[in-house]
Length: 44
Length: 544
Image (tube, rainbow over all chains, first blue to last red):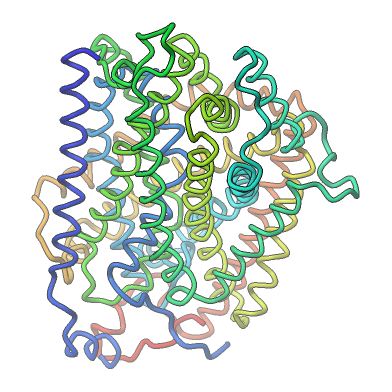
């Protein structure tokens, strides 16, 4: 593999793994749904 | 009108995994590496990631927002939701494509899924497909080809339904039954629950295969250059001159498009079961990112290096040119035959493909079932029976006309390729221009965990539709005349197009029935009013 190939591979993997990690961090650390929100949908 | 409880996702992670499961399929592991290796390797990633940012993710966000909006109006099927977002019957009937695609693709995808399960069974239980690694590679390839052709009935029409109990028919029936059972159980108890363990399990299988491939070293002492490092180079070494070729950009856009399941009629249906304050921006991004992890992270590191190590550069190039099925079912079995612990790794590989396929096929059945339920107003049981009947008929047609996989190829071209372009274009134009970008932007940010750059407003309204129209025009010029000529010359292809036509007719008639029904129920099917939850009206129950 050439240096350019290695750079392409590493950049692509870092981008994808970084994006996945950031996304799941945001999803899993989001505040739980409040009862008001549920009420808002079901009874509005 | 049946009085059934409104379905909803059990958790936010559940809907993300279900959409990701829908997106991750065979294409991630077999189509992507081939496309990348043939179109510039590492340099392919430039148009690929641009297409992801300008095409895939924006269309995905628009679909998530449209789906959730439609759900708030009490609708869950593409025709009804498109009618609401596109404000009238033209968009509603164009929305029929959003049911045609999942249903039409299911007709043949279920067969491919059953092949994956059967191959996994062969590798785990029988130790492979009887390829003798001591024989020359050409002989091994012939054995793999013969096995595939015999298993799929690719040599003769009608061989699969000739009255004998073929192994492939047994696996087809098993896989069909599993799909129907899971979809019948519903959104939360069936699809979400299954995807919640299938997606992590798929990642584990992929990691096992990846670990084996990356530790292969240089297994053939006579060919030390055939090693993993050079195999990765075959996949990733860039050739920047390919960037000046429009075909590279089309290939990248096409790959993103088919990979993310956008314009497929699935996201719009899945998102309709979300709640008003559920985030769609980070959720949509997470589902796309998960798909990219499987595609770039696993697909980009496994297939080409594994083939290169045992088959060399010329063998790998030849394998890539055989297409998805050639690479997956004919070349890789030869690779597994040479590989230490190849039977086990082959089993993990094909089981991973099976999981990728079943999480996708489930997402094809649900939009159709939802459409039948809300258009006809029948019970879930009755609608499932209708769905089984229709999909059994379509799938049996593909199974019967198996010679050269002709029927499968036609459905894949006309429904799974052309249909997706058309639906995505209709959706993004309806969202950005008919529904309105101001309203669409507001809808996307309802309950959002993050705000998007205003640049994406411009992208969704102008760049994405223009990009799609250009790609579509190029596609029509490059491919359509050949497709039409091919159909005119082959009776099986004509019958396959007839099957598509009959399916469209059925869906249009059901949409007409639904339209009358929804009007009689006083539902706002032309999207003239805000959702009920904004007007203080209980919307529970919806069109069903």
